[in-house]
Amino acid sequence: MRITVITPTFNSERTLERCIKSVQSQTYPCEHIIIDALSVDATCSIISQYSRIGDKLISESDTGIYDAINKGIKYASGDIIAVLNSDDYYLNNDVLQLVSDGFKDGTELLYAGTRYFTNESQSYVDYLPSEFYGYGSFVSGWHPPHPSFFVLKRCYLIGGDYDINLKVAADFDLMLRFFETLKFKSKKMDKVLVGMSPGGFSSRLSSIFKGMIEIRRSFLKNSQSVSAYYFLNRYSRKFFQRKLSYLLKFYKA
Figure 1 (cartoon, rainbow, N blue to C red):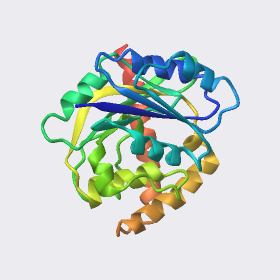
Figure 2 (tube, rainbow, N blue to C red; figure 1 turned 90 degrees about the vertical axis):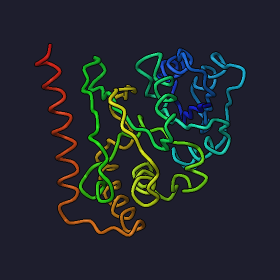
Figure 3 (tube, helix red, strand yellow; figure 1 turned 30 degrees about the vertical axis):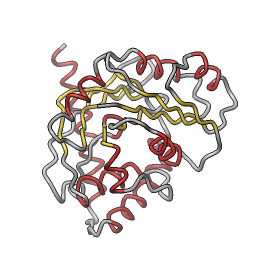
Figure 4 (cartoon, rainbow, N blue to C red; figure 1 turned 45 degrees about the vertical axis):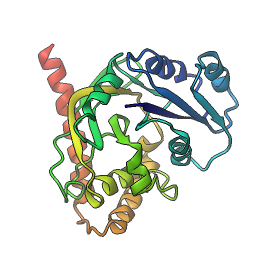
């Protein structure tokens, strides 16, 4: 199966080279589409430096990261869509081979683990999500990490793309729709595939509060009610999962 990797960028000169190299080092061939929001730093020069035949660069204004990803989906020729942000990267050269193998049994959604770097000194915690257990999982606080979420392109054609009216939680909204409303066939991979840099827009305090509002809107869109304790459960679970992974890492060492 063909794979398209979509990378949205804006003034990403600090991390983009690592991201591109991780894609180009894959043993499984892929198309790389980079959607740039008119960067004013060296981002486009870096893209040109590493440009390969068959890759695409689209440089134009957009309304945000999810608008950029939607454009990438539109232009993608792959059967499988991967989204890799410019400050993230594949941890190993065989990531896309593993992803391709994971779709051979009729799987439509594949999710795996993500390595969260806690600071620039390269300390990190690994997060591997639990198994999806059906309708109601998202309300209980479950959802897979977006950097390690892979989807058949035809799922987007059936279920729609990212809601650009949601500026923080459009990835949550799309996963809720694909897993629970549309019930695409999913599979968990017990591997940590993607390294995610510290910080980022969605980790800012103001974005967390905005994300809470948007997540509530997403549940309502998908005809699900959410309790007043949902966000406490969601963020406490995320905290303890990552804290436990961090402690186990040093215990094993």
